[in-house]
Length: 423
Image (cartoon, rainbow, N blue to C red; front, top):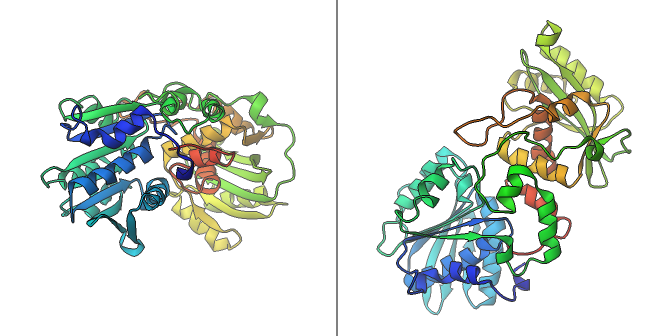
């Protein structure tokens, strides 16, 4: 929380003031990457507004996130609260997604944009900007980022980048971090130690939350390739239970296939833990016979017997099966969010916290945990398209129901246990 800020680290202060220092003011851009909760986002956003209000009057700027919603939550809410306490006047126009910021007779306008997919580039096209701040730039499509940079045509304009690390083949790592001198960009790498408001106990908890590539990226702040098992933290001793407690809510998640296997899971919630209670797994190749939508639907009905199922989360590409469920009129259907990497990160976090448990009766998902691997792809983090059907239905459930489609929900889950510090 911004109200708890008492001091900034040297690296945070540099992120705020690089544009005004003799030794760093020559740069056209700044890149801050590194560990989660290292304080880079707030310190950079303070610096961005401070620079804008010092260098321009009546200028137009852009603040960009993966979505406008995540930008408001992660950047604007803490930033505007802090600016208000420092004497700035901030007039937000929610319906038009901009904020006018005033101080000592200077006024500038800051537009908010979401860079969700390739079509987002059209949102910012045609604008003339004095500067742009790109929060979590590694999550945005290259077309959007390059369109935003192309809008910065005003003399003295600068570009501000912020992200957590990803794969070393990611275009931003290759084109900007590795070529930072060519791009005339100041590069600052953050660790959790650069955030003085983060307590030692919280730092230790974050170190326990991740393993494998996610530990290297989110705790060590390294651009690391994913390799081997996708869920190396899964352990039968930690995650498989012989008996499931009585739950207060129930859902079913479905990965639908005709030639490929279909996998459905019945999930329940009890005391902050999500349990896979039962499953249905049908492999047409092994069985030598395909099943119809109606036969799969009957399996869905059987899985739900004795449980008050709130909704059924279904593979969004399974149009005919979704139509079949609608036709019967019993279950509420939700098309699953299929963001693969965000979903994998969220599942990993829940497994690390032991808040995702599997009944011993669910043999197929237990088998897939030991077979689900990263592909050796030059395109970055891509799972192998095998042994992934129960893995997919689990990911649909976690991404859509547990974490509610939020890109950063693997942070939000841990924050419910008392997280603190700057993001």
